[in-house]
Amino acid sequence: MVDLDGLLLALLAALALGTTSILVRLGTQEGKSTDVAMYTFGINVLLLIPVTAIYYYPDYGLTLRAFLAFAAAGATGTLFGRVLFYRSIEGIGASRTEPVKATQPLHAAIIAALVLGESLTAQNLFGILLIILGLAVVSREIVNERKGLQAVPPVMLLVPLGAAFFFGIEPTFAKLGFAEGTPVLVGLVVKVTTATAGMFIYLRWKGAVPSFSFTELEARTQQWIFLAGVTNTCFLFAYYAALAVSPVVFVVPIVQMSPLVVALLSVAFLPRIERVTGRLVGASMIIVAGGVIVTLTT
Image 1 (cartoon, rainbow, N blue to C red):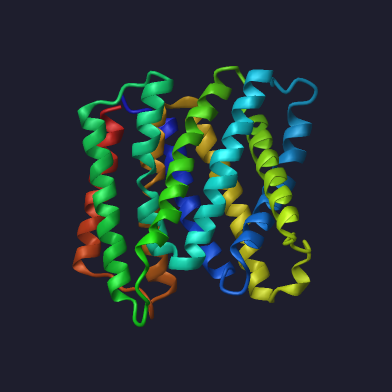
Image 2: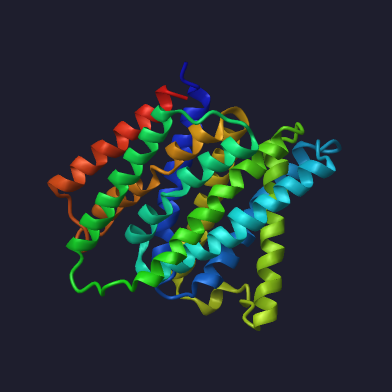
């Protein structure tokens, strides 16, 4: 039976994640990817902490095991994964980054099966592979339509692939935290606070801590970065809410349909760069088919 709540939350997460990718791409045109990552971390913290502190006071349902699990999720998915993800978007573009990152369901499904004992059926695997195949076609088609786009060095593909690996580890840590009875928002606060602290320490060591003042950026860049932080926070909430009620092997493949959102938004808002083709439509149908298979066989 289809988990309707998990499905709707995962679809919302995919929409928010795809929108974030476009906004990050626009924001990194004038700013560095590490600065954008730090700004979005800050927005995550500013939006999540006050609401969580007030709503769940005085019992936050946080055990030591849950704290360590969500902190590990923050270090892997939010810190390492997001930094590599933003760096890849800055270097090779959102339409190239998203499909490579979409190998995340394979990492996530295998790790969840080994650690959490979640079932990974042949039908699940087939649906995941269909999604990845469709996303690869979407990426190739978009890139082929870009005029004057330089070739990507093969080694550069290790960046989004690394992001996919770290993003794939994260949901297993999150599930371990939720098993302790910790609420979604509390887990998210631990996750993003850990990632923000880790990012700040890294940038401080590099001597590259941003000024935290938007005045040094152009107005439109400020707008894109702020909106990216808001949509990323929406993604985090929907993603973790879905993980709290549904298995990893169900949620992650649905969320990884976000490259389809990237493709559609690119066509809608960047018509001079992207255009719809028959292959793009066909690939989108493959992605949807894969998502349906994963949904119905989990």
